[in-house]
Image (cartoon, rainbow, N blue to C red; front, side):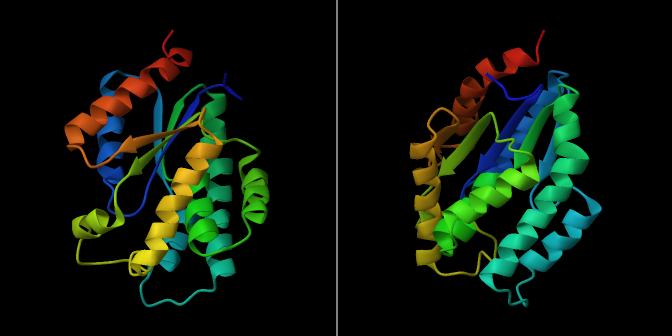
Length: 210
């Protein structure tokens, strides 16, 4: 079932969908079970990646769409080489707060960059390693906006139509790769949402739990 040892799980969704909360709940549950876990976020996870994160999310910066996408890929290249791929070779669970699908959804479907170009670059920087399981938290854009804090980053400040394109992009990815991508209804309570997420993840843990 899996391309390498270990298990690679990513959480995705538009800003304000509750992804970070579910990420923290999942990280806590896996840690409680004593499973070998590495939790990372994108962009970030390395010294270089965290520096790139500051550039990408700084509201006062103006970047071309191409520069934005390439910065995300640079941060991902560092994270994969330094952390994700070595951890998978050690048969660990790698939990990612965003991964390759974010670039397709935001810079591809959201901003209009060529999807094939994005896929090719993703393939190169990840060594062709896709997540074994990706959870997309699906929430209406208007509801997501209500949940966001008042301090918005550079991407969160974009208009509703942009975020609608991103949301629809995630759903298109899920339709194209149903064996990998699970869409979860993020309108439910965080407890019920986590119950659903955990139920769908459990079969994938068999490769880690001996």
